[in-house]
Length: 261
Ligand code: ADP
Ligand code: MG
Image (cartoon, rainbow, N blue to C red):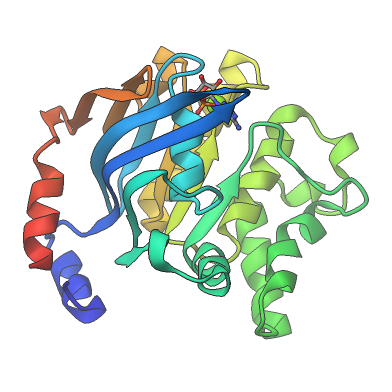
């Protein structure tokens, strides 16, 4: 496996750095006396800095895959590697740390805390961390994020005083507050009208370019899929298309695995 420093060097030289790797991942859910095979042996890699869409109709396995990348769920078989760490072998404590350090989440239903204002909602994940961050630097960082998502005038407002699009902007800033390498968004536009949904995806793309944060979002909206530079299309728990910058990316995992040896 390549060291973190070697990976950083690669990134500087413009080499590809693999952040997420799924290798022959299966997920089976028990359902009464039978079972549902939600994901049927899926392999792909996601590279640092990419803007990735997991696309497919309802029931195709998008949420199951995002939950495994986000370490909310574990595969029944196969391996998920996040930022060089195989999630299957980690203790609960290490999974929690990996999730806190590497991943930010954006949810379909925004999941903001109603009694907290915009600033406090964005600050919230920092309060869960072990380290007490520097107060002044934290305030500046949160104010920067609030400006970045276009909500400076709404800093003191509570979620019920905001539109759906504004609430999702708060959720984007909250996902970024811990400076994660990866932001996962499960159908972030599903509860928005199509114009607002497109604006939210454009905002995520702007942040992706500016901060080099890797975004992985799921959607069944074809219009939004095409904004991504890496499209992984699912059908019935299988990958049916894997296109990165217009090129078939099936071979990418093979090169990542070769690097490990
Ligand atoms: P999508 O997000 O693309 O709509 P999901 O990943 O939610 O798809 O679901 C994929 C398949 O797995 C579906 O058939 C769904 O019914 C099934 N499934 C998902 N979660 C569970 C669960 N907790 N228990 C049983 N079946 C599940
Ligand atoms: Mg889903």
